[in-house]
Image (tube, rainbow, N blue to C red):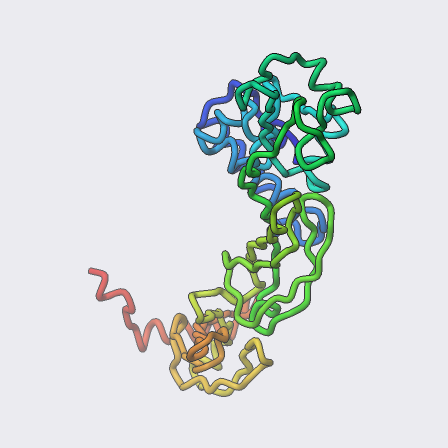
Length: 331
């Protein structure tokens, strides 16, 4: 991943408040829900989250600034003082593994010397032993006794999990789907969206994360968000929808079609239905492990566009002959 300061667009001297403000601004701009037609939005959003996990945490930020962890929050390679590797640049990469995440500490042992130091020999003696000199080679690699050897200590625990974000439609969340997610590394994976997934829920893809020598592969953790729907609102497992009705449907009653996730159904509107009245359609909400949610339908009376002389005349007559005050309870 890129330098988290670069990802958030802040200086290394930025305050915690400046980092928080920059993250919120960029997260809002690049959130998958706001960029439905941009296939790379989820990857950018995941990168922002990863950068904020480093810089938004005071301890991790200090560790990163000191070079103790990398941009993904993983411990950096620790070898000789100064960060060198007894294998050289190419050897260091090999020791870290293909994923670049393995961390080793090296202990050198000199015949007659203390572990952890060079004993009586110098750096040249170590190089000779490593590359075919008279001294013994690395332990476990054909070295012979009496010379300088080095050993691997236990590998440092590495976090090989990968975090990503994915936006799904309400219909995909309700019915399940097969989707493709792009990881921060650019790799793409197929993901099965389970029926009834909720916003904020994580899907774990075991063994699909990063790899490092001596460790089990990490997992991919995908955080799911449900994109806003044109007319349904989510309320737990329930759904809510506003239903526009005509003035004559409100006064005279009638049957009107109501959208649901499973297709439109008919709803009977009683006579004299006021705007704002709510009807409950049982089991028409979101699926769940237990009882499915319900759909709550709230009526909204909509008048025709433009002026209607007959309607205005009727209302004037009503105002005179049948006055009433629906706001009397408000004082």
